[in-house]
Length: 288
Image 1 (cartoon, helix red, strand yellow):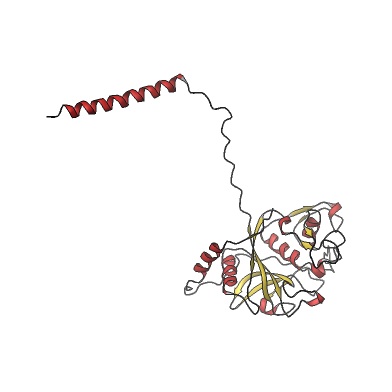
Image 2 (cartoon, one colour):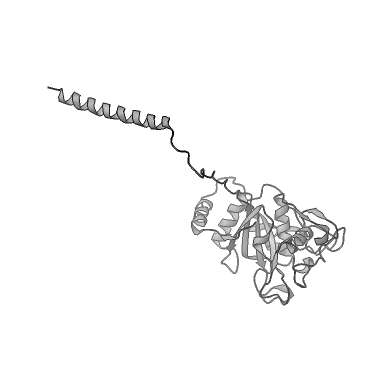
């Protein structure tokens, strides 16, 4: 189970100290060690297209194609870590049981695992992702970019460190004064996956591709996002789940009583200790 948590300030400070060290000559830009899978939330024209699948529960009117950017971004990252889920036919948008990872499969899995909850901006139904009910196998840490025009130094340090460690970053972004589509908000209007540092910007997988016949998102940059030039608001670093420590063996319910042999050994040690002390005393008194 995913456990949302905020990164401790001390940890951020340590990361910042390391990241602000002068770069060595020829140092490689922060980059993931392997290619990030790419999915298009607006895939509506093709085999097993998921774009028109209902997103959320309890009468949520949304579809993956319109508001499924965050689910699609998480599908990319879960596939990056090799995490699959199983959806029985009764819960599947396709009407068939499925095993794997893409926005359609993940959405079906979330719908049957309490993965959606109510948000203030939802007119009806449960349309918001419940972070703690994402599939097992990953942990996330939440961060905020405290800059309206670009990326703050602290946010840049955290993101660069994550990418160097091979950990993808999912970022909520905006690209204007308000979100497109008439949403009453001006941040986290869209979600993308950061994969590499590119000078002053970052390479991303944008899960919105206007080509409805393509199942793949768009590989571009924050500066050239599909919807505009993106500015990061909040972001989450996604890491492999920390293994739980093995439980310590339980002590015996009834400790075994000491045996006669252990009593004898203890008495012998006591006698020897007294003898050593007496010898030391006699030796002292015998000195001229």
